Image 1 (cartoon, rainbow, N blue to C red):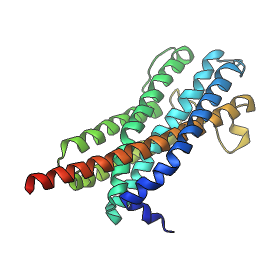
Image 2 (image 1 turned 30 degrees about the vertical axis):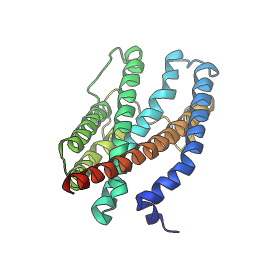
Image 3 (image 1 turned 135 degrees about the horizontal axis):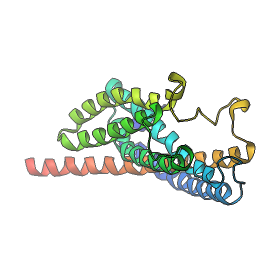
Image 4 (image 1 turned 60 degrees about the vertical axis):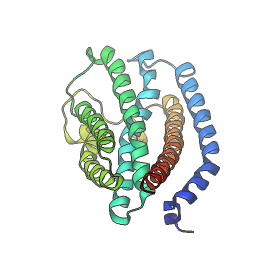
Length: 242
């Protein structure tokens, strides 16, 4: 079985109809378990106190905001190279979800940063690139809505996605590129010496799994909606022309 089979809208809908309930249930279980574990069953940090617990929302949301754009990049490249409509629609479906994750990341970052840094916002390299990434999300969504021809919209938004990917990478690695700014380096890494303590690490992993599964479930659902909307639009166009 080839992965490209799911570029067929009918096969894509059949597949996602089967897996969507399982992914959705797994997302709810992981989110509830991870957030309850993190907020109610972990100790306060010795320096940041209970404020550190916003980590369980901020880190997964920020991670998914970046990875959602990278998923859109892959889907856009598939559209440019293979002209598979499902990939273009999947990228379009992911954009509002990624934008929402970015808002959550910015809001929780401000709430976390105010008591730690003494300010709600700083023009830190990572924060600034993350804000620009959010503006790219808004521009991507607006461009889809502004262009009537779907194929032209897919072409132009794919180009925009390629450009915005620079800021997605910068928001992830800005601390490594610049040694200035308030934002701390990554606190979760495969290198055990760089990780947070296990008592925070394990519930955070469960929260991240929940956000990943939630993102997958929402992308599946929204892509199905986009496919059906395009079918309806095509039918209405035929009726008008007939």
